[in-house]
Length: 411
Image 1 (cartoon, one colour):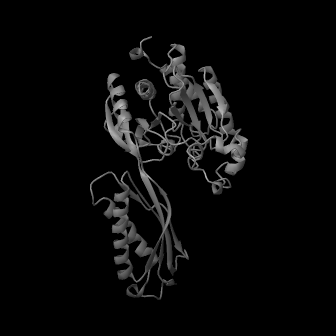
Image 2 (tube, helix red, strand yellow):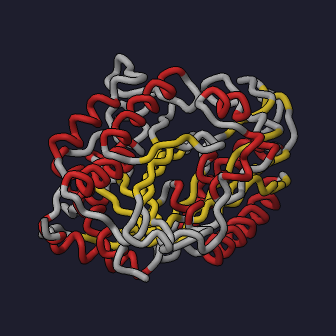
Image 3 (tube, helix red, strand yellow):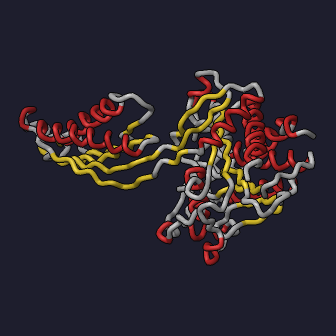
């Protein structure tokens, strides 16, 4: 069959997605298939069966990732990788990760059925424990540290025990690492997890990059005192200062053009009694943007606002940096290829950042990456109400197939 006419089997793909949703199914209609759980193990077995049915040479690497290989006509070329993840958050949905994982397998099955051999070797990779910190992809790019082995995830298992449970072998972890420049490309299909595509009636999101994320713990110290006997003008109320701080974060982040976001998502007031003026507040601060310099600019403006709040409220602010995920731009050549592949199918596109983290951000450390978004209805994700339409799923997988065939022309 000519490559221009290659199409995936949308009905089959959506049937496979429905079948996968049975593993960890919850009464709300979503799934709780957290990494290293029994539901995760069963779901992985189902996916392994699909990979074998697609004539992939299947293995479980030492990190516990599922890998399905297909030889190319020139195996001296670097492999093209496609994939995603199938683990979920607790009380999650049926599409996050699953669409990209089963979409990648469907692409491989379509190639096999039509006797199409790519020039490059093809690898379908289903990363383990994406939701718990991109553990599987971290291992592939050599970023998984020993201190993460003893982290306990929502299954109740440590990463160390979880990897063993799903068939990995930490003693051989070094065999998983791939060097920078060792892959031709990594492509990932995913639901948007936001509402932009649906609101604008756009079929395909061409991901510009995965945003950088910076977290801080912010501690505000005032003075705890009796709520009934301390005059309003004589208070050092840490919670009042925190309220002003939260408003300042919103004001600073929205004061400059762009798609940056800032969030105070956690707050605790101490001592936490109704008749005591809060003397201490601990809250979080998160900033996200594709541009690391913009994140730092916003942070400095927020610090300036905090200094002013501290003076006027007679409190102190302390900022403790917790974690930094660097932004991961996608490859401009692959962005153009995804856009072209979509338009050849009569689909509308728009460029957009990914505000959520993905395995692709790790893979960008070792080679060019591209991501394809399909609409999330209502912008809902990490919820049993998460939904993407069957036609959108089929469209996304066909764009993935088209993009793969174009990347395969690379030397």
